[in-house]
Length: 259
Image 1: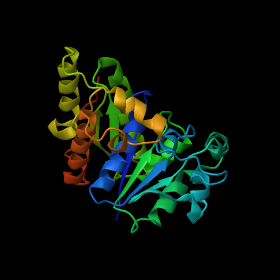
Image 2: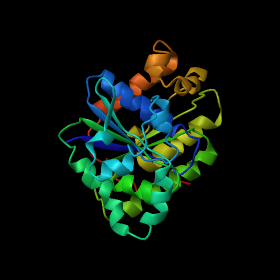
Image 3: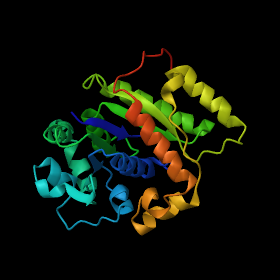
């Protein structure tokens, strides 16, 4: 069975899509067969890979059973692209709760085709985000290690707990520090707060702030294609290895809530 990981954070601008794309690509470089699912109507994950599919080839087609909506975009890397149609679909799906399970059902049919399914979700807690969380078992929350970002992590934790009523296997598998600057004084305090609540091993290797990481999507390339020798490419390699070494089981749950 494929490990299904959703990259999610209730706060935007935390490097969520960038991390989902580069982790998916990095897993492929380690010999894994990966499906990247773009569940955000802005389609940033699709654009970051240089994919602009023809009309009608998107997530809605995928959950309707259209095999053409699963695109081969790199060796070992497949993409279910997003489109602007998702914003209209989300508004309509609010009236049809059964829609929340369609992504899970569509991915279940692909379970034996992939080693990993990586889902890039939007920051809002709407139908698309809930569909992604219902379809996954693991959540990775990218976030910069500053105090204002803790609120987004707390809201993400609360949403996970809500979804667990219908998806008991869902758990926070990792917090991914992004835009990392170790010289900032408050980083250690935020790191300790996260570890106090979620456990020592919850933090994945950090991703340093990088101009090259910001530039890569404009060329439709991953960091491994655009700047493979850069320090930030090494950062993502370490994250990929940490994910491969981790087991898909929640650690002993820690009581309490993050500040």
